Length: 101
Image 1 (cartoon, rainbow, N blue to C red):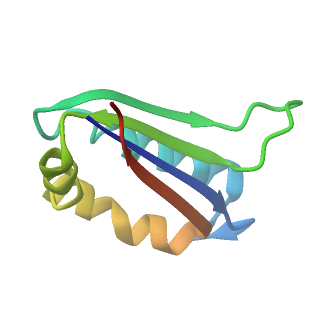
Image 2 (cartoon, rainbow, N blue to C red):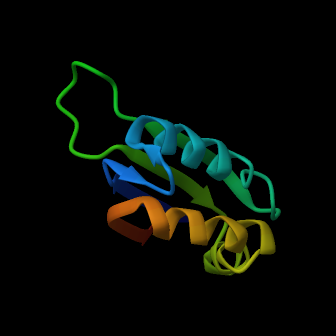
């Protein structure tokens, strides 16, 4: 199994909206990709909780059957369609993929 984690910090203003609006739009767009390919076991999207010591605005956590499922997800048209918005609003992105034994 592969664990795929992506964390983003968004710009204060981008794509004609403020950070709060863009975080919610990004979350909605990401959640729309939750079942685009078979083999996705876990698909979670979360936003920073007010009052908690958070270092990122948005996080995606996925557990997938294997690297082929991750590649299929990353190249799926629905996933590719959200990339222009994400690139426009994201200030910083961090990602880590690793094998779960």
